[in-house]
Image (cartoon, rainbow, N blue to C red; front, side):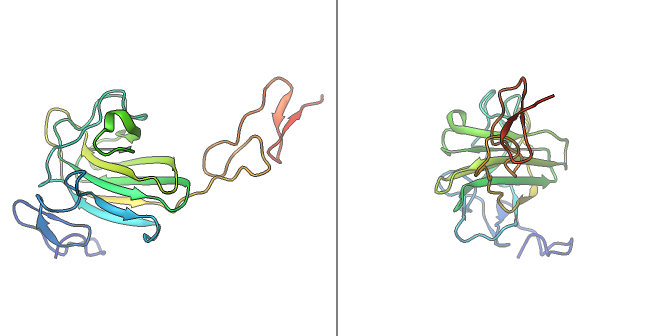
Length: 212
């Protein structure tokens, strides 16, 4: 057994060339889920329970993926060209805003793409905003039935930054704009904006004319 014991301790560590799987078992990195797009850690939105907490370790995995410059909104330069990475495949059951947080023992970058082998062309967002051992957070509206690939990577393009990490997926937030044409959608987004000038968004979420 390996990984967290749930009380701040460890159930054990794996040997050389092995990784601790999300099930808390030691497995050879070459065959373990998460090493490549051919065998990602699969998260089925129909069966997972939120909030979801997972642990992982990129130390024994390989450096297969990276986020090219200007490919991922939220990342202002290329990330992960020299660092090991781990791949998760998530298919949501409900169209909603999902928030993922990653914390670990190394300075990481996280990014999401809709085609696993084409991060450059299909990346929808990324985060690399804090120093070593900090928390990366990424939120976005995901469509039900579409598979999204989440990469946990080291941020560096010149050295291999890797190690253990914890991944948290919060309960999804379903935007609500029924009967509204402006204002907050309840998930940090907006239902629209008014034209401006004398128009303003009233408490009912409708554009109204301001009368002095």
